[in-house]
Amino acid sequence: MAIRIDTHQHFWNLAKVEYAWLKPEFGPLYRTYEPPELEPQLRAAGIDKTVLVQSANSHEDTVAMLTQADLCPWIGAVVGWVPLLDPDGTQRMLERYTRHPRFCGIRHLIHDEPDPDWVVQERVIESLKVLAAFGVPYEVVAIYPKHLGHVPTLAQRVPGLTLIIDHLAKPPIKDGQLQGWAQMMRAAATCPQVCAKVSGLNTAADWNDWSGADLKPAIDTALELFGADRLMFGSDWPVCVLAGDYARVWAETNKAIAGYSQEDRDAILGGTAQRVYRM
Image (tube, rainbow, N blue to C red; front, side):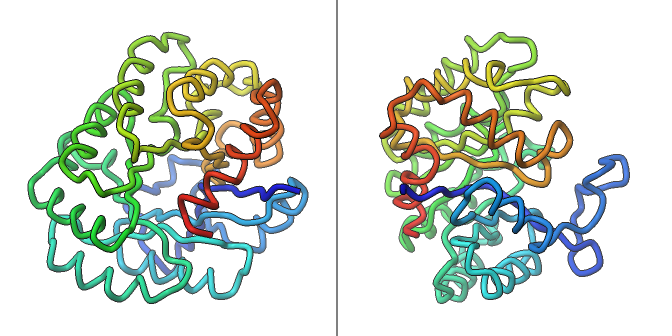
């Protein structure tokens, strides 16, 4: 059977690492989430491996994730953090992190930066060139429309860098006005090194009775633009619990892509991730 990979899940322990964004107003997210809670949900869904993604712009969060990967064989890859405003620091940290066999990428919470153009600063571009030299992908927390337009710029400025758009850049599923989003995604998709995650769409829908049918127009557009070999499923657990749970996200995503060819479904649900993250 083809491999099944969840390319976007998080853990956080409020007693061990500081998460500046995580406040009591986030309700059910404001508690510790660790591997024993997720593992049975993965087994129930038939997921073979996951990609554990950073939740804080800190060295402490990255070390915590790599430690969890050492303890959990089903964590197939870890996307960490480096100080992108410091190219020399980026170099030093990558020299350290790339020694770990499951370290596979970098992300910065650009959507929490007051400056929507944070990611295209010259110092950040220089650091992204360091990532490219190490062969380390960069995940773009691109929220439509503020950040999505920067993806082609990054691809042009750092042509050797694999870029991964998280959550399909949060398309406006709730209001159904996908035209502007699709146009910006089309520009990103023209860059062959850009991939995208079919993740975080239930919280983009932002209502409790969403279904796979609500997600399908955005996923269909992404398939048309990127092809299945540049798309990857992600649960965005535990953030997904704001509008559902793991089983629901998995089931409804599968319903949304049920009409695709077996080859395309296998790529989106695992094959693309296996290649991109070298798992």
